Length: 147
Image (cartoon, rainbow, N blue to C red):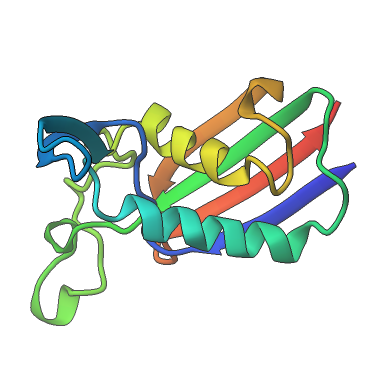
């Protein structure tokens, strides 16, 4: 079985956390909690969940799976010319996005979003084919294949 779908939007990372201190209502003591460092993480994961739910209606997969993701990031305006050349890539524009966000944290957001929708847990992923590149339509092409 193969489940394939595209999630539009600018891919966001998951994994990094920011600590903050709050006062407990129970005992009045200061406590530490963790929140996602990336403010775009929750909306991106919600979008992934929505498109995954549309693409897959079956029972949760319980066996091993292969995960393929092609992340498509928008090119910065600095990669394009100006004036009448504003739609032309500069010769100096890099082919691959070798800047943040990093690939493993992008993947983590997808894996976590698919938990409970397509598979029981992301530990079921036994093989991955992941890449990131530039494109005019940002988002992620996601393919889950039952092995």
